[in-house]
Image (cartoon, rainbow over all chains, first blue to last red):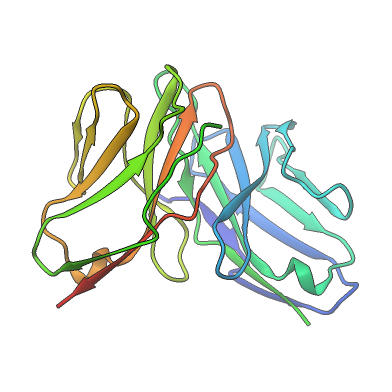
Length: 115
Length: 110
């Protein structure tokens, strides 16, 4: 059973470039969540997606950030024109959300470094 | 999301039990109590969750106060690999996001 997979695990970008982070949920999970963890801080919710729909994007910065979860393929978190403040660990989680409680399972994260 | 309060840090000796407390005085009736832990440079790992009754699994036990305003994660025999940041989170069954606080950094001494 494969858990949540994220790639790349490490990503280095120069200021102004684009960063694309990919997340493959647990097989059978149709709900995906993205979180950001700045150095020495806790995780902050960014966005919650279900297949082809954004359900809650209350934690997403208003500009430069976007997310999608297409019918086929992984979920993508896209950061345009990266700045040094975007340097962080980005974690994806997935869940089943079928009755009962909804447990989120996290991936290993993508560590983005902006030079 | 309702707020949780945890001690910043705790220490334990190897092979001794550890009790990690969490206060959640504003918990609502539909909030589940979830615990995750995060080892250095890794993603959060699910530990256990509960609603009203105490819960046990292979990793830990969760003791929930009768009024649900607090809970305790119990590691029965701490090992060096249990050293991590432990997060107590309240999640409404209908909500998507989890709100992480600062967590408790557990140090296990050999």
